[in-house]
Image 1 (cartoon, rainbow, N blue to C red):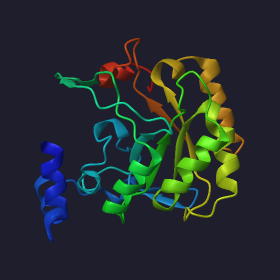
Image 2 (image 1 turned 60 degrees about the vertical axis):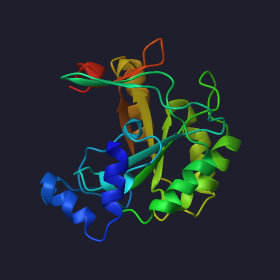
Image 3 (image 1 turned 45 degrees about the horizontal axis):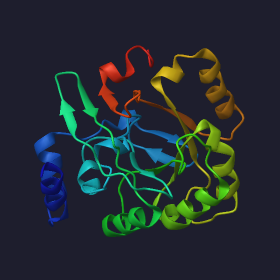
Image 4 (image 1 turned 90 degrees about the vertical axis):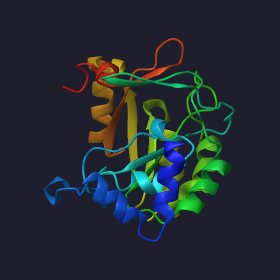
Length: 231
């Protein structure tokens, strides 16, 4: 209901200005930075878990974020969103997680475009136990490539995405790739170094640290989900 209300407000002629005024969310220009030709108003972005169905994407663009992540997008998307639990320090997203098909993501992006902020598509393998394939990446990029500035992928999917994006001209800024890693893995020095090496090699432009997904598939957002991983 809340997401639907924000989406409705953002579509009104002056709706986005109302959101800006009520939230006092203007971004200090000193927070802006540029990476790979993309201008980010701030370093903190909105993860896809808050609005996996892209219901209120235009509204969230007025909340002071530097970029917005959409998805996850998978060629075998069947899950519907599970319940959300709130407490003082965190948001817990219960299993199953919502996952978009490439076509569903395209339809929602077409409905909401153009976007004021950089947009990144989180791409996942059809199987959680296997790496992304070039065929999966090609299908997803063909569907949403014209609407996004780059992709967020797990470390084992970087090569497949890089190969596809090098041959694709549907993005305005070229092959921008961010590698994703969960907070638990980021605490592991060898995994962290693998991400750093990928950035230094030029294959990826940055790292996104995700909240931990527990054995049940639930994800904890907020301080408990990261603990000291990003200190």
